[in-house]
Length: 432
Ligand code: SF4
Ligand code: SF4
Image (cartoon, rainbow, N blue to C red):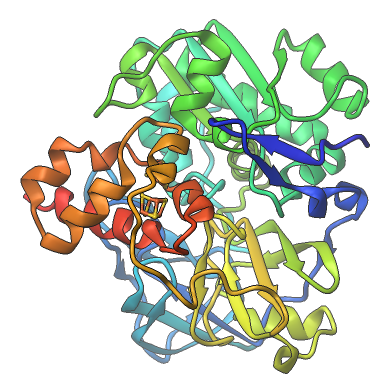
C-alpha cells in the first residue's frame, strides 16, 4: 500500500506521517473480554446518562446499563457479562475530571442481550435503532449519530474514511477486513437520510482497496480521493474540499444539506442492524514510538493497562499514555483509565520521546500559530482571552469554530500548548 510520507498543511508545512506506513496490513488482534470493565455514563455529547442498574446486579453483555431522556443522548451497554461491582466517580479522560461510571466484574458465561428488532426499510426505525445501539461518532467526535440521521433536506452523504491522524490506521484496516459490512452500514445511513448522493472520502490510492471499491461501484457510491492534508479530515473542511460548499461559521454541515459520518460509525450501524449488537467493542490503532502500530479490537471499558498487558507490553517502559492520536489525544494520569466507545487510538510514548511542551517560553507574537490555522481563527488571541476569561471576546474570535487539530501548538516556536486554551475557551464560550 502506498501511503504518503507527509500531510501538507496550510502554510505549506508538512507533518510526518511515516509511522502509518505498512500498518494497514496488520490484522486486528481481538482482545479477550476484560476481567473488569469501567463504563462511563458520559460517552456522548449531550446530557449525561443515569445508571439503569444497581450495585450487586447481574448484567449480560449488550444489556443497557445507562440512559437519559433528551434528544442528544444515547444509552451505554455492558461490554461484558458479570456483576455490577460499584457505581462511582472515576477519572474521565476527555472531561478531565472524575465522572460517574458503572464498574462490572466479569462473572458467568459470556452471552449477548440482543437489541430489539427494527424495520430496516423504515427511516424512523433505522434512526431509533441507531440510538438504541448507543452509536456516536466513532472517529472521536462522540456526536449522537441518530441526531445526524434525523436531519431533513440532506442531498449529500459523505462517508469520512480519510483517517488523517498521523498514527491511526484502524479505519483503513476495517475497510480491508469488513468491506461488505461497512457498505451495508453506509446504505442504511443513506436510507435514513434520504440522500441522493453518497460520497466516500478516502486517503487511499486507486486499487488499494479493490474489494471495497468494487462493492461501492456496484452500489452507486462515488469514491473521492482526498489530497493528503491532515486538517482536511475534519468535517467542515472535508465538505468544502469535496463539494466546494462552505459550511458557515457557527453552523454544521446539515445546515447546507450535507451529513458526514465516519466509516467505523457505519460499521457500528451494520452490527446493530444485522447482529443486534450495540456498541460494546471497536477497533483502534495502538501506537508506541519504539514498536510502531498494532491494530486492536477491544471491548469498551477495558482499562488501558489491560490492553497493553494483553499485547505483551511492560507498562513501566512507557512515560506517557494518551487516549487517541498523537495530535488530538488526551494524556491520562493512570493506566487504570478505561477506553471509551469513541477511542480510535491509544498512544504510548517512551521516556526518550521528545516532550515538546515541557519547557514553555513566553509568546514572541510571531503569528505562526495564526497563519497555519486551517479554519482561519486566531489561536494566539484566543489564548490571551482564555487567560483573561473574557467570554464575549472568545465568542467574537469564533473559538467554537476550532476543530481542535492541534496544529497551532505543533508549530509554536515557544512550545506553548495552545490547544489547552482552545479547549478552555470553548468551554467558557458554551456556557449560557
Ligand atoms: S506561534 Fe507561539 S510564539 Fe508565535 S504567536 Fe503563536 S503562541 Fe505566540
Ligand atoms: S487547534 Fe483550533 S485554533 Fe489551533 S490550528 Fe487547529 S483549528 Fe486552529
